[in-house]
Length: 413
Image (tube, rainbow, N blue to C red; front, side, top):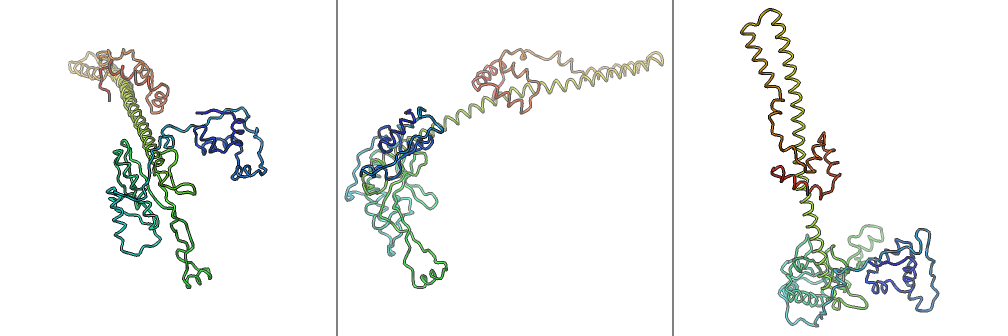
């Protein structure tokens, strides 16, 4: 990350074109422009440098200080190493003629030659997934075939698996670089034109009536290679321009494929690492919930025991009242004594204190921090559990769930 003051960046963007600064600072011109706009640094408009080169007067606005100071440090994002533009570009030459076709490219040529109908301005796009995929007109088919054959040959020489993938109505080329599949296409630009209308259509158009397909798309002869992966960084399109042809950009395109594969790998590894962390969190907090359930069950058992104890005490009070009434009538008969013995036995059976006294409480003396914390929670509602999980770090839970499992000797999920 490069740091620079607002004033220095302001002076730089009005001294050199953004593309020159981006090259010198190893960053993207678009990201440099974004930084300027975000921090109120005016940029030269289109035509500024050509007017300056011709000696014409150009207006340079002052640096605005309304929102930001001149000495504020700004971060300029550097171009990453996995960006296709920073990878070494192999030198690849597209031959003037194909001496030997790659198998899939040869199938494309044969598919093209099969067409028995009259060729028109529509693009030729084979839907057969055994063919190398392209979408071009008759006028550029020969060029496109040479470019595609060169790309396929280079990929095969690098032992990269290359094939096709049918996505809805579109067939794309797919190259697998170090296990990462990258889709790409070779196409021709289209441009809308008004088509020639028949006399009837001209009359309908003059009358304001609807004319079907008033405009048509016609090929422009401009080819372009495109990487169809959103995960890639840097350039994703290489096309014909006034200064270069696609044939001159094949090396850069190959570097772009490698950059896209690298970026996909990094994202996949990051996603897998995140999934592992989430899996570990589910396991650890599953153990926490399991121990919380143990303590919740103990509280529920205590409440139930308390209710049973009150019931047993009420039963004993009732038995004493009955016994007093029996004694008021004189000495207790043998049958009355038997009933009292039975009733007192029922009350003793209802009394949970006897079971609690005989219960094994050796596992309650754990000094594990998690067990101690759970022991001090009086109620285990979802809200209380959520607040408890937020109140401690994940490392704390992970360490103490392991210790708790070893101390209690219980199976942990």
